[in-house]
Image (cartoon, rainbow over all chains, first blue to last red; front, side, top):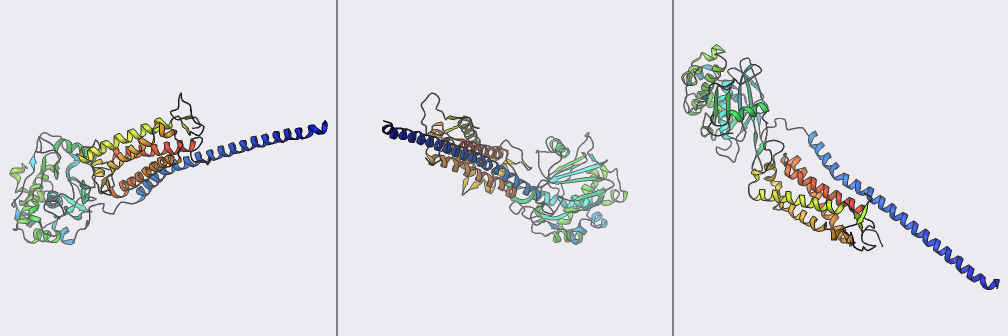
Length: 311
Length: 169
């Protein structure tokens, strides 16, 4: 009997061992599956984190790249000595030109709080390097301001190639500084002359104070249309939007040719307009400085527009 | 993360091979795809009407019009805003509850691939904003964030799904 039952017991033991092996195998597979899932989840977190990490890296690289030296528009370069001389013409040349021709005058305004900076009357210019009317406006403005102080860091620029009066030669106020014991000057170039999408690449940003001036005075009733450039505010005493000199006069002339016209041809249309406008600005600036310095404000050049500017 | 459910299978019988995804995966992916679709639709309308009218600052580092009118606003002559619509419609379809329930490996691969492609394209657009256009568009940034979010949901839900459609059976 005992011998007959032995194979049955052996088979039962075999079945039990087999079931145990299957259970162990299932447990092993479950452990492996759980381990694979855990690895997948860890990998997923790394993948998810990698994308924003890569963006952060791009931002850090962008921040680390220094701006171009001038930051101005394409091809801005140092002024030639001829242009530097033309921005400080001989006072006798300015006296000779007097009122000049083809000059649009700034408009006096009254009853406004004085616009000042560092305790001095402030002249605020807002324009853009692409703008041809700003291009012609900068010449007389820089000449007039140079009678009261001195600029550093002015660069040679030009208006946009694809706008009216293309490539009008000019100077840029971007990155420049102005020192004077009589006046403060802030020149803001909002855009370069480089195309960016439908507009031009941004350059200088208005400070909140400058923006407040623009919002108040570069809008009706002070000027015909809000937000026009070039915009000039002479200490909240005189305003001008648009160019005082037509850029048409400068079409086709290089920086040095304009400089030569200013210095050597005072009776020509370019010098008559630019120096005449500079004299009108000088008269306005003399109102801000209460006639200081005397050698400038008492000169025939500065008094040529005394009646209109009200000095 | 570990809380999983048969996607959209409440009250129904479920197959043992049907992948269970985290409870948050289906609503999160659908919501992000819908938000992205809305943003892309707005940007597309503005692209074809008046890009300057986007509700966004101008003139500084944040300048939507500058971005949406740049050369990079088109890819292979197709406005990227339109590509955004195509992307989010595809993701919306791939993230429907019924498709999350399917165990077809190709479907899960397609969902991952489309989401990954979206993120790669977004990285290219961010690169363009940083180094070429040098301006940012707030609306575009919102789309970028949604795309990153959608990618994260898809990748994590795929990793958590149990059984994984990528496991050999």
